[in-house]
Image (cartoon, rainbow, N blue to C red; front, side, top):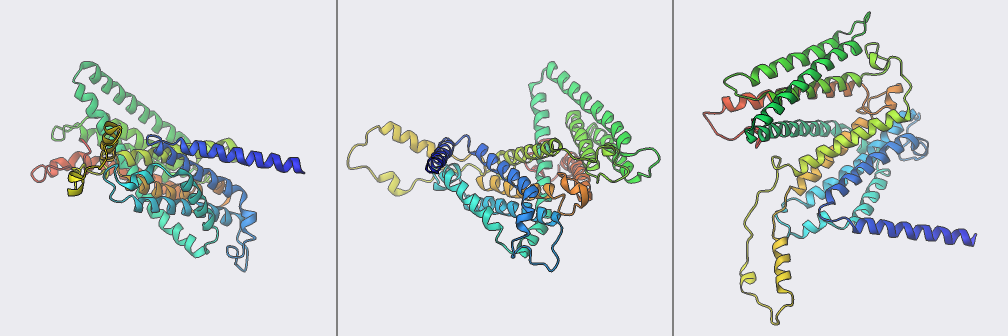
Length: 429
């Protein structure tokens, strides 16, 4: 018994030392990666609790205070929402604290990049505390999460438009035949992939003998957008480029596929999963992994993007005391001290507050994915991002992408006699 206690103590001490080593090794450059890792950890915890926490939560009187105990799925959804709420509050508090940080001399800059042991402890306390909240608060959070998820998807669309236009401008800016050929080849590949993809969608989601008018409408509507993108982009008055049109076309077709694939497994027009209703652990793992990649990429890209609420550089204000004060004794390593002061006076490279806001919205979005937008029932509820709400969210996101891209093409023409600023900020056309 004594030996077992000693072994457990040694293991605990080693684990603490390992955690301290990892946390202390997080530098300024790796801070964003650390935030991504913490967010990914929250998704893994949500997924695990969704699978195993229901029996325990049924025994908690402040959660299960109903006259009739709800089914297991209700407790699974509730567990995911409570972890998501803790994650949301953690990043929202950080976002509020980081409002107005302009340069690295601000003490809050150190808070953003350091103090990781305390951050992890606070995150754990917040998540645990969420399981002591009444159901009414969690239900309210579930309602606002749907709107927060919509905002996150809108940010994804704007980021995609910014990325595609920047990609096109970079290749065109080289003004060499090789890059023009590369632009044409990539555009051709994207269009070929789009039309081949649409053929597979007709085959998978409109089986013969079934009335699948809604699925056909979704696919045809996406194809109409594809042709409309090319027509508007190549119009002489627009002077657009075919590369953004082709990439956006493929992305819209992918969103159409993603929406149709999210249809319930028992739906007769979902031919893709007609013979595979059983859900394996590997399928769930892949679904969660792709969700993590999508959410983390969007959060990092949005937080570091210069087109989305990035702080503007301001001259450093020097006070009277800073100009006139001199030390009584000469300082050693004066050059090193001056170098450190210059480093601290540098402006921050991205908006810390907006970076954390994106993670807050991503927490809402991931909760909706893991719970099927909190309305999944039956076997589909065991999947990631499955159910009719997921279908409509994906389809409407595709339509919003199409509308924003078309607007980015025609807006300069509509406003060319007015302000020269782009309606979408720094997005290039």
